[in-house]
Length: 255
View 1 (cartoon, rainbow, N blue to C red):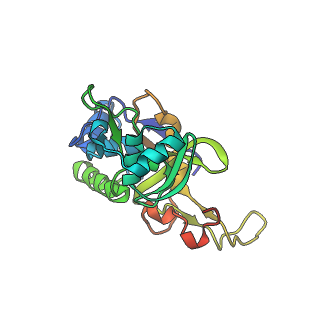
View 2: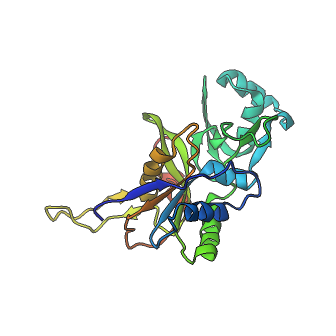
């Protein structure tokens, strides 16, 4: 592989619960003469998956518990938002002013359980929060199958989200769901330029591809939630779910 091309699927409308995202993607690609090709990788922002699947909570419907009220005072956030975060979490990891980090129900350790209020008001009146997909790997597989039925091509699908990192400022795109690729490429047994055999190298290519696509997607009002990566050659390794990226607790040195 000498180069890759990345480009957004243009003109996608605001996604609402029940929308057929696969059909919308295929239609917009056809409109600009860019049909799917074998080997294409689709990186899809978590937000549009969550909206299409109806993973939305109306803020006025949330009744905060005593725990949520107490945490909200510590963190400085709306107790209703804290309750939504707790409801979609397995474990509270850290809480301090301006920050709550949890293990989300799918196993992702992240701020706010991935709960977000940007670009999620479907009717313009009430305020809604978007949760992460219930099972992002299943969502990726379903989207891949739908695209194959419509086009005859089963692209790799990566569902991405923006996560912070414990030791570095800023967020970066990461994979929280995928279908059709090995998210972590185990390079043990390969050799470097001088013949040294690699004994500990594992490359998280799903996160690297998600991060590259996030530069095209943007983080605010760009309206580019689906990006196609063309030209990347996948390693010869079995496909696996994105949850295989998660570090097992037994070797987690930081929790």
